Image (tube, rainbow, N blue to C red):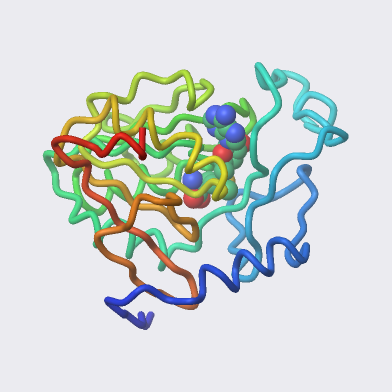
Length: 225
Ligand SMILES: C[S@@+](CC[C@H](N)C(=O)[O-])C[C@H]1O[C@@H](n2cnc3c(N)ncnc32)[C@H](O)[C@@H]1O
């Protein structure tokens, strides 16, 4: 597995955005296997016409999300997960929240490889079920949990690390909550998307993907809140 690192901000997020806007990698909301790695695909907002899990799940016991997800499920490739954990320097005393946790891979890797505690927040009950199965298979159920919640409503104030793979506008919408509720020094990493006017402390490229890193400051500037 080979990584390419760069300490400078790259234009690739702009190209990802262009791909995104051009509709490249457009996904159906339905039937995405949790273990697939989709190296060229990026998340997109769920259209008002998109079906709910209840309509699409073959498992009748899975309930529909409490409300429509803000973004479709697309997993972060594992080399990018590893780099996100590296960049945030995740250690065994960390509490890692993945907001929109999909199949749970980020918090499961944080627990399995770093000994951290992991909390996945996910609105789609089908993804929660997959994540719980994956945690069981990985033998980390004592260190991870998955909350079926809207990430905009979740109390994640005990996090020491927050991971994101959402959308640019969702990152910006989430920014005031992150800056108000997280303790100074909390590390945030985002796959593919920045935080608007909040300049990252570090930007890294891995396998053609961009990962952004911020540290919550003591006194966030008013324009970011
Ligand atoms: C692009 S996927 C990222 C999955 C995972 N974090 C990863 O990197 O592999 C985004 C996830 O966010 C979930 N999601 C969308 N809106 C949400 C919300 N308001 N609250 C919680 N989860 C949400 C989706 O169901 C989806 O699983």
